[in-house]
Length: 153
Image (cartoon, rainbow, N blue to C red):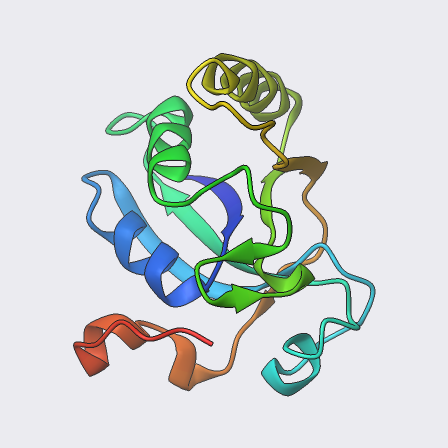
């Protein structure tokens, strides 16, 4: 099993989309890319922790490739908006790929370059080395699935 970490706006939607993929074993909503240790949702939503709402995707590389995960990542959000997805505004909703190894970094950078050809505006997605991932509170896990609604924020 391998891991991939993405931020693409509200984690409820992102988690639900990755769960649909064959070969994805588990998806956990949480926080990545910031400076605050063990942040709470209330802290992250202020935008002061530096964390983005993120998902940790655990997948079987014999069933799905990292490139296929990247393809979905680009498809489910607008990577050209800075610190915003839909009505959700703030650094916690930024677009980011947190790579776990050099191969992921290479593929993410190549993918971003290729995807830029499809957008008129510059892609603002950051590509950074994965740091500590903090699992979000239990009520955020599988939120969309449990509540059958899509409402972020």
